[in-house]
Length: 230
Length: 230
DNA sequence: TGTACATCAGTGAACGCGCGTTCACTGATGTAC
DNA sequence: TGTACATCAGTGAACGCGCGTTCACTGATGTAC
Image 1 (spheres, helix red, strand yellow):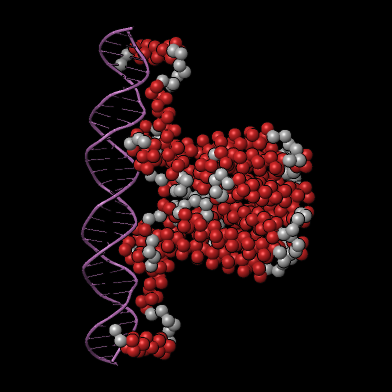
Image 2 (cartoon, helix red, strand yellow; image 1 turned 45 degrees about the vertical axis):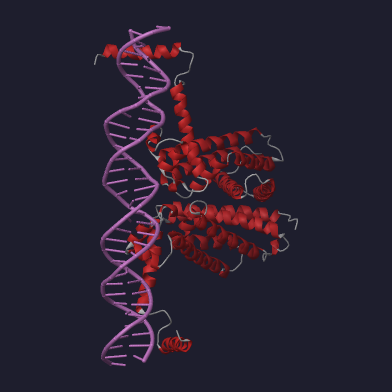
């Protein structure tokens, strides 16, 4: 194959894209492909409402997405790869939640507003949170480990955030990490309660919210008394 | 069939048992049956080290126990039934742990000795604790619900125990339950850390123990400041 | 104690089923000129 | 713009496999007398 001709072809393609009024990869074909990919992910999330990831089958997921089993391979090399993509999506949701929490003013109401952000996000993205919370401790090793890594990352970011509070300014890193771990545990437990409760039950939701706030206030009281040996 | 003859047979059996020097159901046949049953449970626990319960197959479990698949049905009507039996065994282990903890003197060292009991029991019964912790949030509904019921029971027993502490004597039931929930969360999280760590690594174990003690001390400080509205 | 019969844990063949994966294909969309 | 060719998402048949479950059986253990 002649190098010059390859170059010409590449440039022609690039010019074609630049000249067109569409972004790269936004043709009808690519769009349809992305829709099928999304349908596969949605199908999996649907099935995960009543089954664990380890119990999913590729054929079920494809069936739910309205495609033939072999079409699955056009999008993911394996079910496990789809699982990792679900983790990406789920933690994108979670990071959006953290950004929302950071926008809240850091006031005396910090506990209330943090719990509020959590409850609201779990409400709006049940299936993502359910996936993460359930597969965190059980299931396929690759999926489990990816989730744990993300949660550890999340906890250490939380520790960094905590270091900005006046009380906590001179805590040791270890103590901050310990406290962040405690808070993440509480958040996960609260998320589990929310997922167990009937969806769209404001009564159950506000009861859980009240309990979560109490737990965080109890921890906060401990924090005020703590003498970090950092 | 003649009623009188049936009665005679039944009584003869009862007399036979009473007269023999063996307890009922302790013949060679029954003993062998119990050994096979135990082998099936052990086989399942073995497989559960790297797989979730939902991913077990009856044939695998039977294979691991050294019996033919159909023999499984002589002991359990389904894999799910075996799962429920595993829960029984696991919580028997956990209740033994709680009894051990209650025998410890309630002193200033109560946190240290509680963590100590937990670490020791997880060390000695890894597979039971792993099963409970993993299947608690994922997996087969029947198994998951049975575990949650047991954990809720455990938490409310803990709340009762807590009510005996002087500081906590006039806390409201709700606050005691809330605090027990917090402690159970911490214990579960600690158990997860222990199961993640390399088995038989005293260094990892004592590091986790140290962290767990810190978390409990932090909570205890909060408790001392708490004003229950009970 | 000895004998004849009952019980029942474990066997092994057989079944139909859904699974993951392969392969050659189709036909709509995209590209070069 | 029109034509000829390339790309590639989705198809459908086919495969071998391990699965749960059924069934009639075997032979050691237990029981009656």
